[in-house]
Length: 238
Image 1 (tube, rainbow, N blue to C red):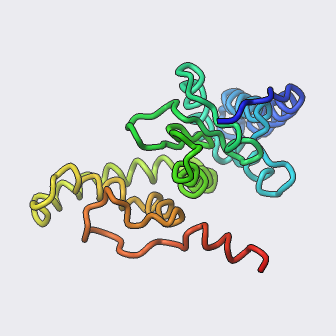
Image 2: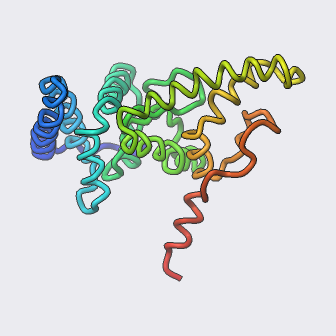
């Protein structure tokens, strides 16, 4: 993790105020103008201080606009992850966050040891990101979840948690009727977590499908999409 050369007070103030305005404009339509302004403003201030958004590209502007409006529920979850990272000395990774439209912690909020977790634009549990594999986990897997949350907005937690609940129930039934040769916990995890379309997409982008934790023979056999590294290779000049 490289040393952080300090924050940007001007960008923090400007983006915080802009975010608060966007949040208020959207939130007041649903009777939550003040809470929406607080969430969007706080996120803008933190991201501005850290120089997170890439203002040179449309993607950076879109990330800020979505985080401050449509994706506000997940932005609020990201503020929680940021607070945990700050309180637990999560190890903020500046080189994977600055102008990358995401915020990365080596530790922070990590319910499951060894697994990274993404809430909004905040990725926790990145581990030793000096290792190429862990860095690619951030750029090619967890960053996919960052943009899934922005695209789906308030639907993202409904889809993700809903699949986990339903998939877990299906996993128990599948283990009892078809997969007794495998540990029940592994079968349930396969249905609830690995077969979640949002995870299938992210693991495929990371060129990591099927993942080692998935029970063989259950679920999707092929990747959902091309891996990101092959997409980048196609875009690189010959």
